[in-house]
Image (cartoon, rainbow, N blue to C red):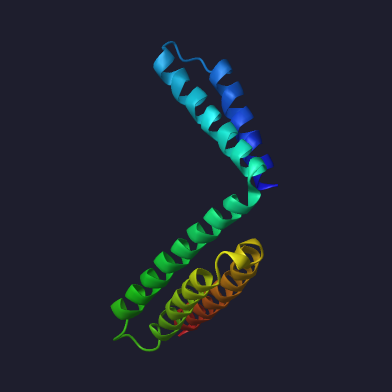
Length: 142
């Protein structure tokens, strides 16, 4: 399915390159290059889906690591202000733990871990935003 989306993006870029009103080839060439890259990526995904899943899992681990570090930085930035720092710090540590689990269980878990961790991350991020919204609402009422 991911390969299908990339293929569709490549076709759309190719059609856009043909229909664009660019006078010079430099503008059209960029769209053609992006279309070719998308279509090659689609072929790689269809040709070797396990490697693609492996690469996406490593990318997901790096995203969780960056999010975790950013949340911990946010927590230390607001450490002196009431309880605002506790939840981002815990979520940042949770993201770093998820990163460690992803890296420790590769390559066997590359096929199922992506969906599981994205669902967990969305759940915790929603909880964080709900608590933040309740805090803002409580502050605005007072």
